[in-house]
Image (cartoon, rainbow, N blue to C red):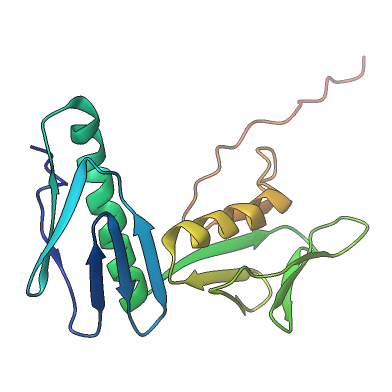
Length: 181
């Protein structure tokens, strides 16, 4: 039995769950998420507890058991509390700002980079170097943060660029100049 898959999911009182065969719909104050689960996995609700069970002991059922439990748990957490991802900008002259809902980045290019938020995502900027991506779908929050980071990934020599909060960038030693003779 999967250690992750057999753990029950506690559902807060503010979240409503509808199970229709393999489709799970989760509604909460932040939004609504739905997902079609594989037929190898079934979801059952017992009051405030959700259980994810596999239908048989085949290899694919065992592989999908923990994954589906985690996906459903992330849906419940997302519509009740939401997710956020923090990004830090490092480098002289690099900064971020909001124009309406769009995130505008000055990253040393000849132009500003504008990033519109997908549905269900909000951007926030603290100061000029901290960006917060928040929303109720963990997958979209992570993908949006990764797209922002790709505008200028941290380089290993000076560490300039956009990085996740708490990310450690391995630094390389630069060239050492050979003395003139």
